[in-house]
Every structure is written in structure tokens, then in C-alpha cells.
Image 1 (cartoon, one colour):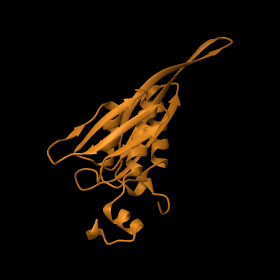
Image 2 (image 1 turned 90 degrees about the vertical axis):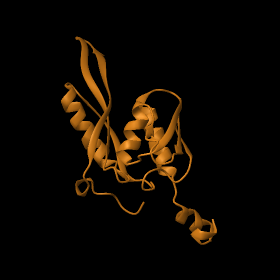
Image 3 (image 1 turned 90 degrees about the horizontal axis):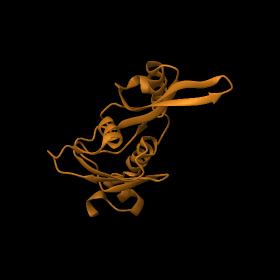
Length: 165
């Protein structure tokens, strides 16, 4: 990754993955607030996630979007799928991503679907293994997407021409 990506130069679309009501017990009772997990992406290989917490839902979502824009990264995706099968891990969350032929669509559950569709993948088979916690599933999916490498990168590592692979 050479340098940071400027989120303002991209046409980012945001998607709320989960909203959670959280409470903090204080001397006077309970303080209610909301936490929001948000994914942003331009549908062309740029994707990021963030979480925000506030007293009201819209403010939490706004904070989540701001945090997500700061974490935008570039991922290697082919024009309609992903280059190869990959397993992403984070905590107890494991996410398997498999390339699929054109016309398959995004076969994925909630949190995984939000991330891969924001990244611009149109055909992919996924399986979420382990935890169902949206935070860990999103982070595991991001880990999987960041592990993707193009044939050119693999060829360069092996010191061969891409045609030889």
C-alpha cells in the first residue's frame, strides 16, 4: 500500500451493518447510547469500515461513516469476482471467499455481503465460519480481501513472467 487513499476523491457509498443499543451503568442509573458499525466503498476496489457511538442513532451512524472513511484501503478484485480463494481471520471470526463465474451474484450473509458489495465484487461465494459477531465478521472479511493478490504480484514474487504461472 503506497500512501493513504484520499476518501474525498472517491464516490463512497455507505452501508450500515449493525446498530446496537449499549448501556453504561453509572451512580444515577443507566446511560443509554447506540453504537453503529458502518462499511463504505466505491464499488471499484476501495473499501473501509468504522464504528461510531452516540446518544442518538443518526449521530452514531455519522460518526461511523467518518471513521470508515479514514480506514479506506485498496483491495485487488478482478472486474467481476476475486482472483482466488482466500480465508480471512479475526478473533473467532473466519470468512471464506471463493471466486464465482459471472451471473452467480453475491452469495453472502449480512456483514460479509456489506463488505464485498462495497468493494465492488459482483460474483462471489462466501461462508462465515466461527463467530456471528458483526464486528469480527467485518474485520475477518477485510482481512480476506487484503490477502488477495493479482497474478502479476505472485509472478513478481516468484521471479517469473505472469504468462508462466
